[in-house]
Length: 322
Image 1: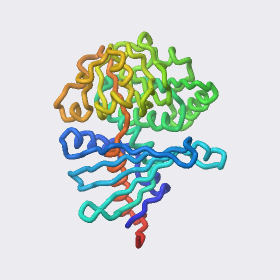
Image 2: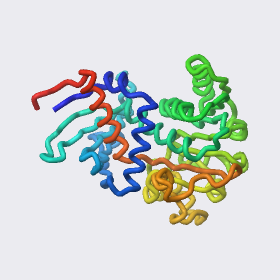
Image 3: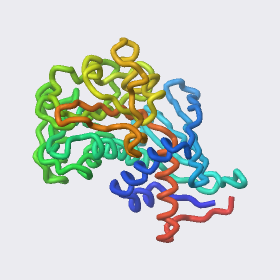
Image 4: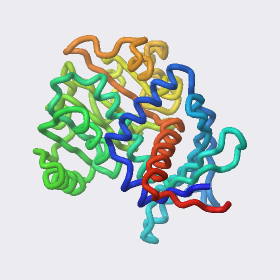
């Protein structure tokens, strides 16, 4: 059995790598060569400490496995991260554990990479400005993904905590050398060609009237019942895409619009089908496109497999007699 540490995964897997890996995952899902299994949720002795097990199979790679994601908010008082992820890859022939891959960094990468794949396919080619709604850890990775696929010149950021937004803007200016302003949410959205939402909101933050024709919106935050970041009237006005359409209507951003009766589930286009050109993507320069990313285990398996293969080539994977 091999072990890939958090440090090794972070050192060896880039955003550009992740975008190509996740693009391939979407295509495999559409082709029927990959399968997602039901999510299992649990908690610790303190019900506020939770975990989820997401599993799947990529048949084309003979790759079964699972990711355990944890959320222990009290870890902050211990100086530890509140979120953690570990991926277990199984041997397809024997069911034995082939590798354990530390996946906290990889989860942030694969989540943002889905955004990058969607923006590359759906945003206007001349998109140059992006509004980032939310200024947390994941928002940074989403910005990196957008910058990897479009020549971004201006960044606008909003957070409920103005100090956090200002710090994010300063980081963008210093590390990415891009113009970035912390703005009220309506001003940020009104100026953007691309809008990325990365919050844990349970009510609409981005209103329909703020979004210009031709804008692409990536809704990255909703991954549980009751979560919502977009005005349902915006969704009604847009052409909608999702990583897993059935999931998007139960735990994703599109659940609110379906429940409100402004979006028919059969109109949601799977991103994989668009990438494979089985369905159309953006139809015009004025069309508003919305991509709903609720996440799936196949992304975790594929990025962990890539990290393992890269670590094996570089000699950075540790072999353990298990």
